[in-house]
Image 1 (cartoon, helix red, strand yellow):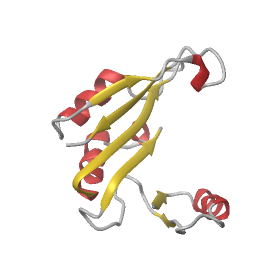
Image 2: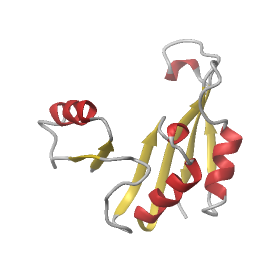
Image 3: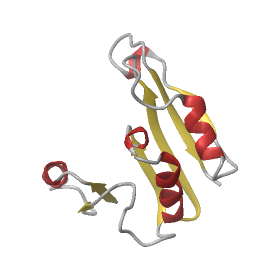
Image 4: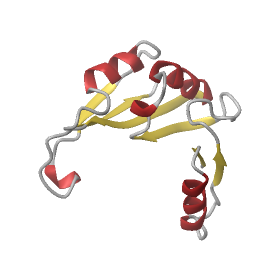
Length: 129
C-alpha cells in the first residue's frame, strides 16, 4: 500500500495510525493529481472524496489509471454534497468512461453507511478494465 497526500500533517497521522500494520504501508508527501509513483505498478487505486478537489479531475484520473498494472481496478468513493461541492455521480461516471470501458456506478444512499439520513449524493465507482 502506498498513500499520497500533499499535507505533511495528514501523512504524519497516517504513519502514526499504520505503526502496527503489516506489511508496512509507504506514505509520500506529494500532489495526488501527480503522484510520483511508477506506472503500471499498482493492482488497485483507491480514492475517497479526492477526485472532486483536483484542479483537473480528468487529468488526475488519467494519471491514476496509468499507475494501474494490467487488469488493475480503479475504486472511487465520491459525492456531491448538499452545499454544492463535489462531483455528481453521472459526471464522475462519464469522466471514468472516457478513459476506461468498464464503469460500474453504485449509489451509496443507504442511511446505515453514514450513521443517519443525508441529503448528499454519495456513490462508488469501480472500473476493472
